[in-house]
Amino acid sequence: MDGGVAPLASILLRDGTTLQIAPDGVRAGDKVIELAKIQDARRVSPNPETIAFRVAGMGLLEYQPEREGDGATALEALYRLRPELRPAGFGVPAGAYPYPYPTYPGYPGYAGLPPAPPYDPNNPTGIVSAPGYPSYPPYPTYPYPPATGYAPVPTPEQRAAMQSLAERRFRGVLTPFPRRFGELLAAIYQLYASRLRIWLLLGLCVALLTGLLDGGASYLLSIIIQPNPSVSGQLSTTSCTFPYQFEAGNALIRDALIWGALLIVSVFATALQTAVMSNGARDAVLDRKISVKRSFGSGLRRFAPTLGASLLAGGAYYLALAPAAICFTIVFASTSGMNLCDTSNAATASGFVQLLTCLGSILGIIGITLAILFAVRLGLAPYAAATDRISVRQAMVRSWRITRGNFWRTFGVILLTGIMAWMVLFIASLFGAASPILSDFIATPIAYLFTVPFIAITYVTLLYDLRLRAEGYAALTQQEQREQQETPSDSQQSSTTSTPVPPLG
Image: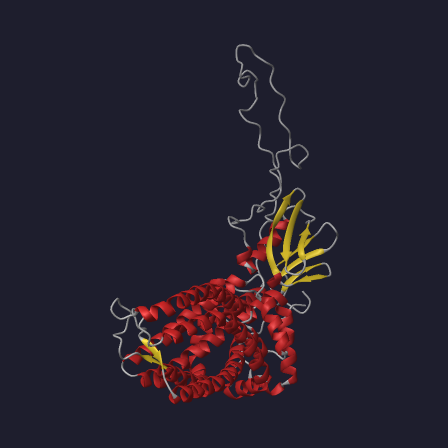
């Protein structure tokens, strides 16, 4: 193909054009198809032989080879490049020898059968009664047909390009082909483990601060909502008082104001953390050298859009949970320190508490469903704003657009990696049994050093995989080339020893 490697298969079509299958794409006449956009490929008709590709953004494209069996050749070449497209049960191609078995009249070398012997009543089989008639017809002589059903052996250049793609795919970096669910998880773990030292260094710069802020907010919250000293720790038939109560007096106002200030500062610190970590993760996905200085510079330039996208995406998430949270907060505040076993208290509070509890449960189910939806569909917006020069609105639209039709894949990856990060934070919280200060101000910030880069790599890897499915590899490559031309110093620093994958075209 033009500007790429030689095609793995090239067949002539009935309309006079040529269909070429190459590691850098498929060309049919003047139409160029990216391998990453092909969603399905198979034979749809045996006579006349017809193969069809289902391509994102183009629909169903059908092609009829000029020579019978060439369709199997093209499909086998495509399956070598995109093994996940091979239909179940499609092993050795059925068209390995595409010509019909040459025992029909008219085929070169076909001599025909000798005339039948005369009928002999004494020998109904009629075989031995005819002198010289053989037991079976003589096997016709004909030239052995070529095995055109197999794709040709790749050339050294094609083999080198395929090995380069396989090597990049193994290391988790961006390739022209989208990844399946398990491959996405493998790419995330590979990118994280192979550069753990630089992730910890970036974490010391940004994640440690957010860990201290979140730990301080958690410590203050444990003071605002404190155990009730008059209760053993759980409701019982003899003590119907909630085991926790709000802090009272001026101390509650003071600690609540400090807690709110810590949350506000934490929002800004988290946005900076997301911007810096996302740019480092983008360099890892694009197989560039990760630089702390460049990650910080890019993160500071994209801080405002990242903050805006984080506020909108997070606002949608927490607004979905807010009605249920308000209901349960009112229930907790109204029953704090109240003994519900006392009939005088129960008469005034029982109906109100039950009503709000029931309403909060219903709103909680609805809110959790909407929160999960917003977390998946809009969760990539801050990372899109951090890694690309787009506005907050464009980042929100992009996140919603690329997750359309990929909800469960995105949800599954976020869920599994989130569980891994939660387990690390849970282990850090266990130190709270010894001392809350040890858990909130030491164990939690240390856990952030490991979990924050892992989450950033998860979202950036997902972002580029979904963009690859929606926009194609050529669009991503051209965008990165433009950015490198605008910042030549970064492009020189990010050069690696690996062989880059050529763009389509």
